[in-house]
Length: 210
Ligand SMILES: [Zn+2]
Figure 1: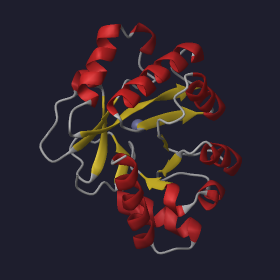
Figure 2: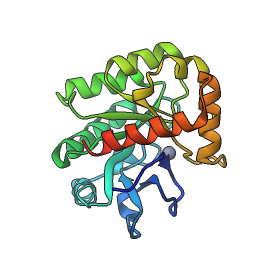
Figure 3: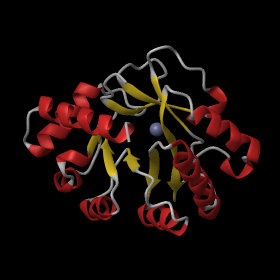
C-alpha cells in the first residue's frame, strides 16, 4: 500500500487518499485507494440484500482499504432507526472482510457507539470523518477507541484533546488542499504541519493495515 495522507475525499482522482465511492459506482483506477459504502444521505431504507452483497464484493477488492462512508445523521437522511440498521450492516461487512469503517456522524456519536455495541461489533475499528464536534463528544468517541479525522473546519478544543496517534486529516468535499488542512490542524496544536502529516499518514497506515 502506498501512503494515505488524505483519509477521506470524494475527488475520484485523488492520489495518497482514501476515495469514498458508492458500490454501484465502484470502478477502480490503478494505484488509487477506496472506501466503499452507502452514504446515509442516500435512500438507505431502500437498500436490498443484493445491494449489501455488492457492498461486500467491492469491500473485498484489494484497492478497497475500508468500508464507508456510512453512519448516521440527525439532520438529514431519514429515520435514525433505519440509518442505524444500515450502519450495522456496514459493520458486519467490515468484520467479514477485516477492514475498518469510515463513519459519517452528525449529532449521533452516542447512537453510533451504542449501535456498534448492541451488534457486538466493538472490535470493528471506526474512523469518524469530518469531525466538527466539541471536545466532550471527541472524548466520548476516543474512549470508544475511534480515530478522529479532521478537515478544514473543526473545533480546536476537540483537536487539542485528540492524541496525535488517533488523528487523521481529510479534504472531503472541501476546496482546501490536504496541505492546507494539515496547516490548520497544526496551528490548533502549535506544532509544525509536517509533524501532523507524518502522524496522520502513520495512523492511516496502521489503521488500514489492521
Ligand atoms: Zn464525505
